[in-house]
Length: 586
Image (cartoon, rainbow, N blue to C red):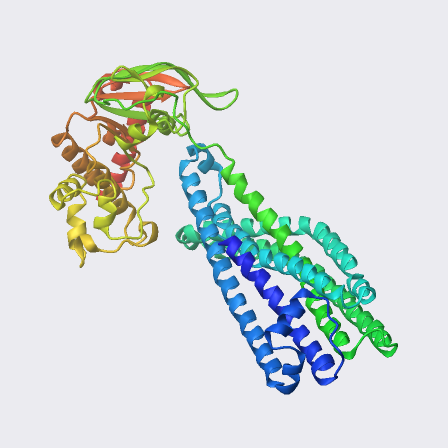
C-alpha cells in the first residue's frame, strides 16, 4: 500500500507540472505564434497527442480541454494517494497497538507493580497516533518534495539553465534552516511528550480513585496537582509553538524571496529576449510548486522529531523482556502435596523477605496464614503462582519442581481471590463467567450460593443481568468480594487462594462463606490469608509468618496453648469484640 501511495504521489507531481506546460505553450506557441522548438520529450509527446501546434491554433478549446483533463488526473492521483496512504497508516497503527497490548499482557508482574497506567495508556494511544500521523502525512510530503524537485529539474533545465539555478538557489538554504530547526526542537518535543504522559498518569489515577478523593475531601488537592502538571505541559507546548512560529515566519520570508528572485531574474531575461513570456509563466508556476513542498520539510522534520520521541517511548515498552517460562517447563497435575524447602526470596538485593522457609501442605488441606503487615503473606502466594521466582531452595507441587511447571498452566489451574477484587463494566453474569466461558447457569448459581452472593444478586431488579459499573463501583466492597469469590469457585481449581478476600464482609457472612466452602469442599488445597482470627480458626492448620520464616504452625487450639503472635492477636481481637458488644448493649 505504501508503494502504491508513492506511485500515486509521483503521478500527482508529474501531472502538476503538465498543467503549467500547457499554459506556457498556449501563450507562446498557440497564441503568440512563436515557432515551437522544444526539446523536452514529454512536451513533444503532449503536443503531438493534441494534433500539433497548428491544430491547437485552430481549436483553442483543445488546450482548455487538455488542462481540464490534466487537472482531473491530478484529482484522481490525489484521491488514490490519500486512500492508499490512509490504509497504510491506519493498518500500521493497528499493528503497533496490537503488538503493544499483546506485549504488555506478557510483561512480568513486577513491571506492572512499578509502571504507571496513565503513562502506558499514553504510549499506546498518543504515541502511536503521532507515529501514524507521520507515516500517513509526512512521508507523502517527503515524497512530494523529492518528486517535485526532480521533475522540476528535468523540465526547467531544457528551458533555461540560468533561471533553473536561480530557482533552485534558495532550496539548500531552506533545507539547512529546516534541519537546524529540527535539531534545536527535538529535546523540547521529548520533554513535552514525557510531561503529557505524567499528566495522563495523574488524570487516570485521580479518576480511578475519585471515591477516595471525595470521601477525604481532597478534591482541591487533586485539582491543584493536575493543574500543576497541565501548566508544565502547557509551557512546553507553548515553547514548541513559539519555535514553530519563528520557523514558519522565517521560512515564508525565504520562500517569497525565492519566488521574487526568480520572477525578477525571469523578467530581466524576458526583456533581453532570452526567455519568452510563456516560459516566464512556466518558471514562476514551477517555482511555487517546488518551494512550498521543500518549505514543508520544516514541518516534516518537526513531526519527525515528535515521531522519533514517540517511537522511542513505544520501544521502551517493547524492549522490556517479556515473562518467560523455564526451558522445558510442562503441565503437571497440581493435586498433591506442596513442599517448601529452604526457600529464600528478596525483592531487592540484601533485603530478604523469606530466609530458609520450609513447610509441607498435604493435598486437600485448608491452610490459614497469619502475619504482621509486611511479613510476606501475599508474597508467599505470589511465589506460589510464580509471579515472582524464588532465589534459592525448592518448591514442589505433587513432586514436581515449581520452576518446571508452565506458568500459564499453573495460573490457569489456581483460583485466587484478591483483597481488592477487580470487576469489569459488564453484567454480573458476564463477570462471573469470565472464569469459565462455558459454565452453565446452575454452576454459576451453586458458586454464588457458596459465596453468599446469590441472595443480594437476585434482589437487584435485573438480577444476574445487572450492569456493574466501572471497577464494580455500583456494588459495595463486600458484594464485590463475594462476586469475585464466586467467580473463582466456578473454575473448580485444584488450588484455591483467598488473599484477605473476606476482609470486607461482616463476621456473620464470613462464617457463612467458610461453612459453605467446608460443606462443598473438594480435593482442592486451600490457602486463606487474613488478619481476622475468626476467619482462620477453623482451618486444618494455621501458619504464622514472622521474621522471614514460619514462626509457628498448628491448629487453633494448639496455637492458643502456647505463647506467640497468634495468641497475642487472639487476645487483642477477643478483647476488642467484648468491648464492642458491651458498648452496643448500652
